[in-house]
Every structure is written in C-alpha cells, then in structure tokens.
Length: 486
Image (cartoon, rainbow, N blue to C red; front, side):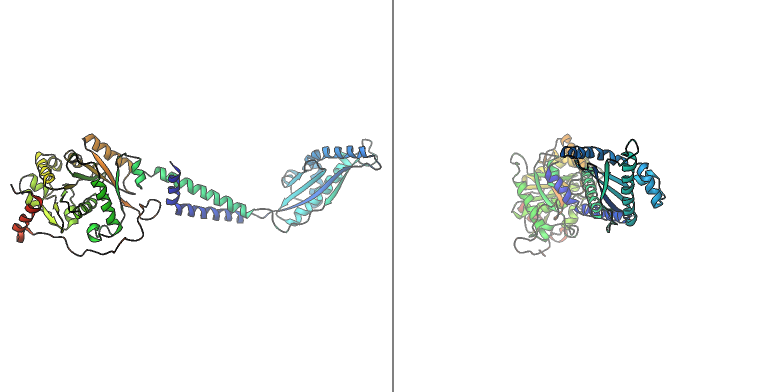
C-alpha cells in the first residue's frame, strides 16, 4: 500500500484511534494511581587513604588506591557483613536478601564517592535505613575489611559520610506522567494496528482507487450516497441542480466519449449482486441522455425482479416479454416518458424462462429495431453473479456498464462478475461506483453547495393511457421513434 492508503485508513478509523488513545491514557493513569507510592532516600560517602604528612606522590598513590577500592566496596554493601547490623539496629522484620533488594550502591566513574540509595514505602524509614547502612559500612571497612594485619593501629582507609539521608517529601515512584505516556502510546499503537488489520481484512469496495486495482477499464463516474434515494430515485428529474444529479450528467458525458463508433449504442447495465443501485443508475442515466435531445430507449431487462416501471411511475403489465413472444408489437409496448425523447419498455409479465427469452432470436429482433430507431438503448439487467441473463445480453449489445456500491460490493464479487462477463464473451465498458460517501476520506469530492439555483421539478412525467389515447400515443411513437407497427 502507498502512503495515501495508510493516511486514508487512519482518517477512516479516526474515531477508533481516538477511543483507544483515551482508553490507553486512562489505563496508564489508573495503573499509576493504583501503585503504592515509594520514597527514595540517599546518602553519600567519601573514601580516602590516611596519608598524614605524606609527600605529594604518596597522596596521588593513595587517591588512586581509593578509586580502585571503591568499586569493590560497592559490592560489599548489600552483603550480610553490612546489613546484619542494620537489621538488628532498626529491628527490621526482613532478611538480608529482602533488604538488599531495596538498596542500591553506585560510584561515579573516576571518583572516590559511594552513593547509597534506599527505597521504601515509609520516607522516614528509608532515611533511617540509608544512614544506618552508611554507618555499618564505615564500621565494616575500618574495623574488618581494612583492619591492620596485626590488629594494632588504625585502618589506612577512612570512610566519611558527606551527606546524611533525609526523609523525602515526594515519592520517587510511580512516575505518573511516564505511565500515562506509555499507556497513550500503547493505545495508539493498538488502534493503528487494529485499523490496518481491519482495512486488510475488509474486502469491500470503498473508493474509485479500489476499482482501479481490479480492472484497467475506465471509471465512468461516481454517484454519492443519498438517504432519500428510496423516496426520490429519479434525482435527475426531481432535483436537476443537485450535485448528485450532476454526477449522472458526468456519467452521461463519459459514456458519450467512449469509443462506440464501431458498434450500436446499446448498453447493458448490471452489477455483481443485488441492491447496488443499477436500476436507479440506469433510469437516471436515461433521463440525463434524453436531456441532450437524444432519442433514448430504457429497457427493463430484469425479467426476474423488475424495478424500472416502479421507478418511472408507469404501468408495467405489458412490456418486453410480450414483445418477445409476439403478443404485443414493440410500438405498443413502448411508453413515452417526460417531455424529451425518452421511451420506456417495461419488463412485462415475469416469465418462467427469462434466460431463454433474452437469448432468443426474437430478442435480437427487438434490439435491432431499438438500435435502429434510437440513439441510445439502455438495458437494466439482473446481477451477473446470480443469473446468466446479463451475460446473455452482453453478447447482443455494445457492452456492459458495471455498477459497484461503495461499502457494499466485495472485491472478490466484482472480480467474479468480471470473469463471468469475460467467459461469456461480453465487453466491459467501464465501472460506475454508487453510494459513495460525501464526507470523510472516501468521499468523491462533492461540494458543499450547488452551482446555480436549486429547484424541484413538480411536473409529473407524461404517461399516455392506452385506454383513452391509444391512437395519439401510436402516432407520437411512430413520429418520434420511427418504429412502425408490423
């Protein structure tokens, strides 16, 4: 993945990241507050060699000797030689090992200083242990470790306490800011890891970039998600100045620029699965094409679950199936819609053998008549992965416009639809992504305003009744489409 992909992942999951960051910060703070405060008291010792009246050279040698010895003295401090007297003096209910675990002895490099630190939950006791340890160490060095071999005289090594331990006012641990920072970093790291894993495991289509990774066919357009789509599916007619309506006009323009000069302008609109917006896309595209003055035929080729008649608000009892079996002439089945040259051919009665009807020679004759007398023929077909109808129609038309829903269509499903179409010998003209979010990292870049005035068209589509205007309708169709009744 590229850097922009990771940024998109972080942007898409920013709520999760923020939640885990807050949880991690809170967990770090809670852990710190649950810890028992511990105080540290320290004392410093100075180790020297007795050189009364000695020359300068002897002083230097004594200092060098002391530097060498302090490194060994540090290891002596946590032993029973030093700590047994401390336990006895302070009446501590601890073993030497337990007491030694709370004492640290260090010496700075190239010095004769020894620093003794004691940690305890009681600040007063920590200071008393530190001072008692210093006194015990001094006694052990001068009376035992460095005692003259003959037992007479004074030890050549002198240990002097340079700084007594005092009871600390503030605890040395827990380090609340550190625990909070560590908790925040762990929460953030967990959030980033979960977001990346979630993105890797998410196989749904989200952006046009996801489509580009699956096919080299052009992206014909992107349609924004609309909560009101079910109430006003024909957005190009209901609100022609809205950004969503403009996206269908962009789709229209891209379709017009496809290299279709060597074949009929008949297109199948399908999808991988149901509920991806293929029917509304087909209907709105047909209205947008008719706005240019082109003669457009909108055919409901979904003979299993037809939707076009409902969306267009027309009677769908007579339609394509009646024309294929020769029950009704094509000119009588076509219904003019709106003020432009848009004619709708509903599906008609649902047959028991849709694939056979769509693959018949009668269907070829219907398509031939439509492509001869219309500039554009749009066929709404069933999903490719569910039935073979769209694959059958793809061989009879210029190609297939694939519709994929953002956040719903899975990549493997779309790839399966591509393979099905390729196996059937159909041509994929391009992909349209529907239900794109208008905000966030996956948004398609719709503006926050509408260019020009916004209004709603209240005029109902022109519907010609066969009962009261059959002759007029036939005359209009013949004049507009050129399709004559046989």
